[in-house]
Length: 407
Image (cartoon, rainbow, N blue to C red):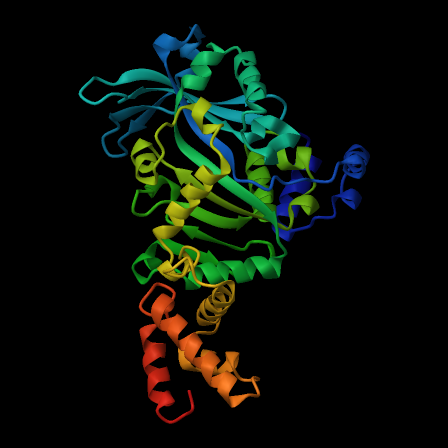
């Protein structure tokens, strides 16, 4: 990449300029004009994961090239205090880079660690198909890229049976800035008091980057079963930041190569990480083999997000669908039940006031009294003292005001 292009990327990162058609060279402008409309999947997909394969399962491996010893030296004595393998960032294709390493991994309890090849896979290996995520339909492309690197060789079967950690799941949706801000504020307002120390929200975009909106729950590297990691963020601002980092490393900026920043400007991403087998077990997942992961159905992936939410958000946000205690009630009563539950949830109003509103325009005093009695009975039988009931404080206020006929 020449100096002019690097300068352009850095300028866009600072100023948040997205109109690349008029700010870049002729070749790039032509590419922007012919670029296809970006289509986002309507499902949760895998964005990245760490793959580990025991060295004894590899057909070939260039250990000398992958191992990258890093010496940590004491500033006081000048002595080497630690030797750590940093691994390597390896180009895969024109714009994608993977990180490979060799480490000793504790695979089986009460047995010594085994030496494994560690590969960080990510959806960037798919190029313009990046937003598809890593799926069963494109996994062959990723495998071919890995083998084509010449660093190692292993069978397709070994690839599918390899164990995974640090599995990132993502969901993308087009959402304008104001909607993203409201979403972040709503999440932030629903955080359990005991978890607020692990949550940081960004709802006031800076003057330099008016697209930076999001909320982060814990840090990826500190994630535990009780305090997992997930975040909501603006893909537009993140893509510029990532591209700027790539330029600084002398690498081709991925997002600029395959998309326009304008395309990414209003994409909101929610992302979470299944850190290890222990967390997977807590969620209810039985296997973290690559071949199993790419076949997870949507229900399983939703289950992962619900688990993460449950560790941070108030229970009223995560309540299951409201159902009456007796499933044999009449369709008419079911409508009345649903109406009361919805009004309780969204208005935080005493039940006495809700019932009065529901019967307000019934002219016949007899019919009005009967309907009011029926609604009161429905409430007592199917809603009172359940998760869908009015909060105690509101209930007490309503009962008090009802004595004066003003609830």
